[in-house]
Length: 210
Image (cartoon, rainbow, N blue to C red):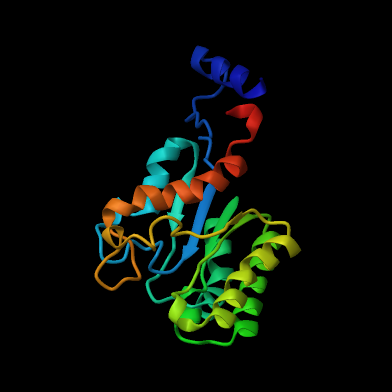
């Protein structure tokens, strides 16, 4: 109210001549912290699920994609503090671990790195959404089961929403996967976004606002 009156008085000439600047409302930032699966590897960036998310959200949110192809949980942990300070995200979509699994990095190390990132984000007042990954079956049932369980266990421990599997309905359809068998095609990206949105919608848009 005071700001409105100030503007009226300034326009009427009752206040000294000055530039009246109205503070623009800054939309909350959604920081996507992932690897090649979120960095649109092998396809045009604009067709990736993260860019499609920004299009879906419009100007309600600012989506920052800080994903890097080949990123590991260790690399993500190293970079995260600076990114939190720079972007001050309201939400962090944490999609890392695939490269740890493919490289056979021990699971306790991966879990520790993911856990520290969750704690850093929560300490910075960012709402974390964990995005789960599954490994190809040739890595063995014992390893893959423990790998997949890491995400659900962390989500439960830190009370974070969980996308169970980013590539659900995609990874098992060769028509939707690139020739390497690891990355989705551009045609698959809307389905990838759908997997994320099933969980993210309830985080960004509470039921009373939908």
